[in-house]
Image (cartoon, rainbow over all chains, first blue to last red; front, top):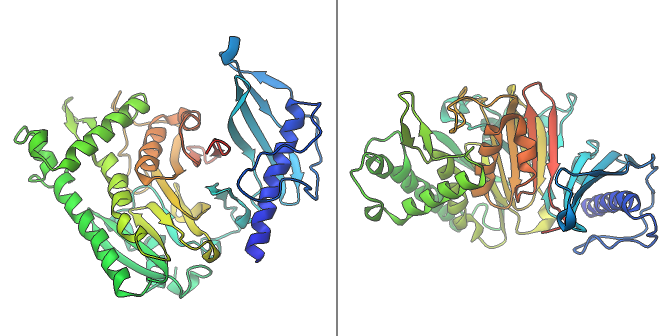
Length: 159
Length: 267
């Protein structure tokens, strides 16, 4: 149950973000944008982001005619999980890309957004042991180096 | 690191198996209904057997492999198993989509180009072999082929798999963790083998980037995109933004990092 609560909370984070840049792209909008068709609450984010003045649109390189590409950098939103900032790209009036510029590290469980898995950076105080990992992804782990590897320790732990 | 220090999700519900193939460890974690059943064992054996067959066809280290005989002109593509044409086509597609940063024709020291499809084969083979594990009812799996991972969660209540991303400057530590239910995680860099990734267009090593991790729905393309992004060097993050991936982590040569989450609304 705790997991579900946290997961929903992460969805709220995303919705908060989307509020954040929605207001920066369309200042007349007041209703909640329906951005999350798959799950989670789309309204009543309990803690509204404290917004710093949002930056205006930054024109893209090839901005001409109907294929105009514009990027918007949202304000840094202070959520209970930490600062979050998003950049979006709009092409021909359609949202084509979302890039997370800042994302909280504090809550390792909140990074999975609608099935997307965002790497959570580990700060120095968090060791591999306390990261509770199941498998290690690295640059071509060879059998030669295996005996000393974190993956070997994990494999051994489960046997 | 002692085995008892690995805690949390790595608990008794997870059954682990390891085999060494193609010069790398193939590790499996299973949880759920078939974690300890005969059917679970059989799926693991089928996975390993298929990877062995792939090695016989594609190993560039075996002079008698199909791929080396093809490269020497002793066989035609029509005489090879169907997998060869599939992999060559995948390599062609990868080269086209990466603006040539990825190629299965790699420059050799004497200035020639050699057929070397291993950059495609690993991810493709692991993704393909995982079909046996995916067929296990009510069972979650996490399969690693030398650090490239494909995983599935049949029952969300069992939680995400947690993939540690090795630090490119110190393989005994992690730079990040990826919580993922179903999908693939691939990392390219030079931490273990020294510099082995070169730009096929120039023959030179990429600059500015230490490792690239790509999270996508298929390991076939996660692996290709991680390698191609690494070869793009300082343009790695910019190039990844054009790719149909879920997310990525770039560790730069100066130790700074960039995380990307692409197109979350279009899927």
